Length: 76
Image 1 (cartoon, rainbow, N blue to C red):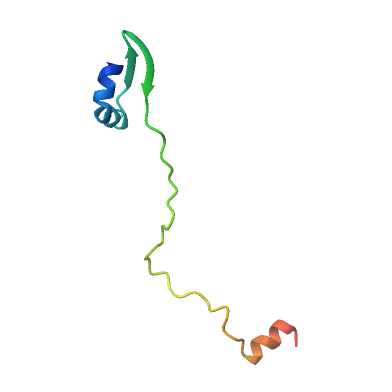
Image 2: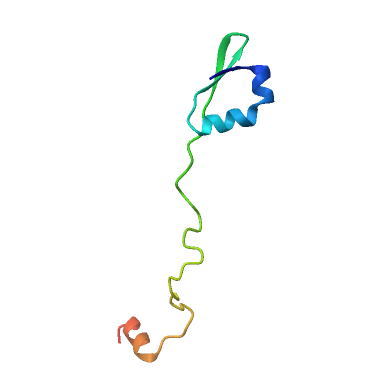
């Protein structure tokens, strides 16, 4: 699809939707094509993927060791 700059300015939302759905959108000055509207690739990375998932309780690193564990760490 090819559109003039004037049409592109008034129909930008529709042209963006068309480009996102895979259509080729070309913007022309007069009859000369000058710009192609293409979607940017979206990242597959999602922060907080396990948010709210039941993964259990992690170890309490601030809990004091019992004497046997302390002796093992100190090599006694």
